[in-house]
Amino acid sequence: MPHWLYFMENHLDPFKLERYFIGRHKIEHYRLWFRNYFSEYIKMILLDDRSKNRGYIKKGVIDDIVIRHTDGKMNYTIEINRLLTMELIQRVLIERN
Image (cartoon, rainbow, N blue to C red; front, side):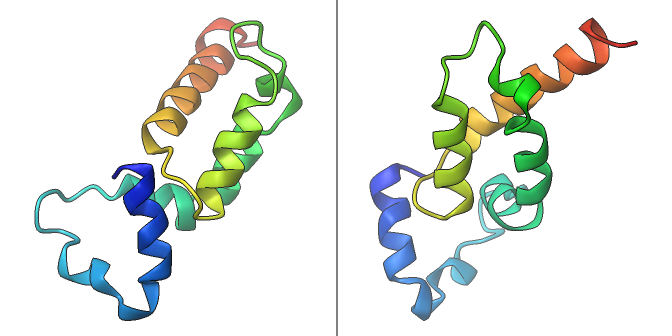
C-alpha cells in the first residue's frame, strides 16, 4: 500500500473499509501484523542498541521507520521485513555465542 493511501486509510478508519478487502487478494497481512500484533516485538528487536548501531544502517533510519509504521502514519512493511531479517541473521548466524 503506498504511503498516500495508507494516510487516507487512517482518516477512513471509522468506516472500516479494510474489512471488505482483507483476505481477497492475499492471506498474509504483514502490514497489520507489524502495526498491531507484533509491534512490541519489532520495537524490542529493531530499537535495541545493537540494531541501531550496525555499521550498514544509517543512524536514525530504523527509529523513523519503526515508529511511523507502528503509529499508523506510514506503511513500511517491506522495510521492516528486511531490517528484521537482517538483524535476526546478524544475531543468530553471525554473532551467535
